[in-house]
Amino acid sequence: MKVSFLIQGFNVAASRYRVIQYLPFLKARHIPYEVQEFPAGIKDWIRYLKGLESVDIVFVQRKRLPIYVLLYLRQLRKKIVYDFDDAVMFRNSLARNPYSRRRQMSFKRMLGFTDLVIAGNGFLKSEASRYHRDVRILPTPIDASRYSEKEYREGDFVNIGWIGDHGSIHYMESYKDVWEGLGKRYRDKVALTIICDTFIETRDIKLNRVQWRYETEIEELKKLDIGVMPLFNDLWSMGKCGYKIIQYMGVGVVSVCTPVGINRDVVENGVNGLWATTKDEWVECISMLVDDYSLRVDMGRKGREKVMGHYTVQVCAPLLMDWLEGLL
Image (cartoon, rainbow, N blue to C red; front, side, top):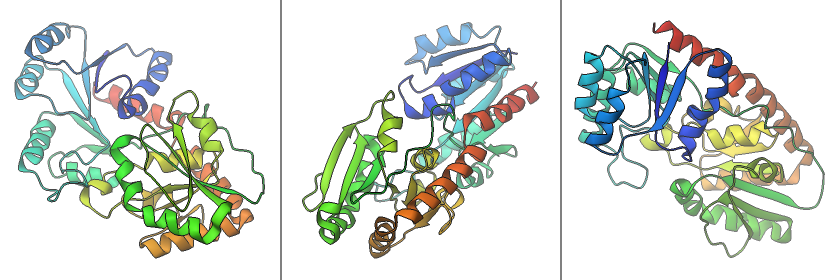
C-alpha cells in the first residue's frame, strides 16, 4: 500500500496537524507515502497523475479536486480519502450570507467520488453524511511529546491569552469590549497576550504581542494562565475543530470558550473549563478564574488529562492507519 497526500502547503496549519505530523507513524508502520502540495494548473496535474502508478490511495486534505482529476482517478481505480476540518461547504463568518450553492455543489461532487471521508468534528460529519455513507471523525490532535504541563505559580498577575492565525483574529476584535472590560475591572492585574502574526489594538488592558513561531509556541502557551476561544454562533464557527483549546489544555491552561461545535465536547463546563455565551458571561467567567488560582489549576489539570487521553496524535494515528489499510 502506498499513499499520496495532497496538502495545501507545508507551512499551512491544517496540513501540518492533519497530515504531516502523522508521517512518522506511517513510516514506523512501514506504510509508503509521498506528500506534495496541490498542483497549480493542468500541466502540473498531468505530471502528478502520471506519477500515480505505484499509489493505491490519494489522500486529499481540505481542497476539492477538479472534476477531470476525479474522473481520471476513478479510471485509474485509485482509492480517494477526503479529510476536512472546516465548514468548507459554507462561507466564513465575515460573509453576510453563509450559504453558497457553488461551495455546496463542489463539496457534494467531491464526496461523490470519495471512498472514505474524515471529518474534524461531529457537525462536519453530519454535513458530509448527507452525501456519503462512510464518514468518520478524527479530531485535530496535538503531539503529546511536545506538550508538557506548565509550571503553576500563584501571583498577583494573570495572563489571558489567545493563539491563532490572522484568518481568525476578527473573533478577538469582535470581543474587544470584553478584554477592555476586564482591563478596567482589574487594572494592572491582568494582561491580554495574542500569539499570532497580526494583532488587535487595545486601550484599557495591557496587550502582549507575540509573533507565532512553531519552535516557541509551547513555551508561550505555558506563560498563559487562562486561554480563550471566542466564536460566533454561525455555521462556519460550528465547523471549527477547537485546536487552540486543545493546545491550551495540552499544557494545563484552563480555557473559556463559546460553546459552539466541538468546543462543547472538549470543554466540560465547570469541570475542565467554562462556557460563555454573552459578553457579560465572558467577563464573569474570566473574572471567576482571575480571582481563584486553585480553580485555574484544578481545571487546567483536568483539561490536560482529557486531552492526553483523547486528542493527541499518539491516540489518533493508529485509527487513521487502520482506516487507510482497511480501504484495501
